[in-house]
Image 1: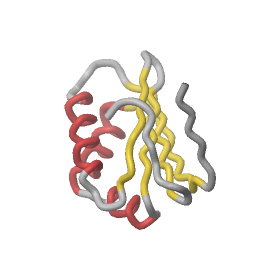
Image 2: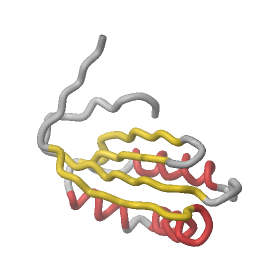
Image 3: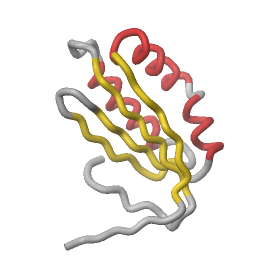
Image 4: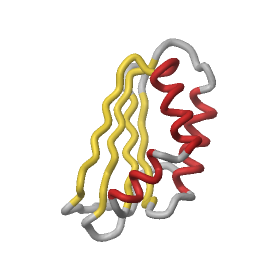
Length: 108
């Protein structure tokens, strides 16, 4: 997925994941692609936006409920990716879960 996600009318939820990577690929790109593929198939998934430069990556996934987020967090393949993130891929990261109450989209 690329570009800005067209989400439904609020309320819905955003999971904001920001990270600083360790050196080297170590299978990160393959796993990241797999996580997007798996998340996209989950009930309640609304879309994803992601950007990365040499220092910082930010991925925002959108979900219809806190329950959908919880189920995704506990998915076995996602748990394996979380473990590798903590042990191999990230120097530091943050995770924020937010309720979206208002949104606007503009196209020029």
